[in-house]
Image (cartoon, rainbow, N blue to C red):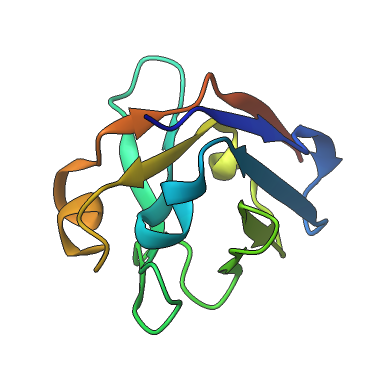
Length: 125
């Protein structure tokens, strides 16, 4: 069982940056894939980024490629999402996700087994 807690959300102007963190409980996190999804008002939750258990495989949604970077520190049981060049359309609640299947492929396609409570990111123009 893994519990995920996000932090780092907030309000920023277009072109700015934010770094989200996802702190996990449980020693098994290091064997899980980790990722991020987001949900804007009135829209479905969508995939943002995923990283395999060892960091060797990384996946991004086309909408964030070149602007967002996912990473993880297994010693700290924490995953990160560095968001640069933010746009108003990035405004959403961002959710951390973890999957027992560690490659990240399943997570990137439909989400994994564990979800955080979400953190709000608001980008103003």
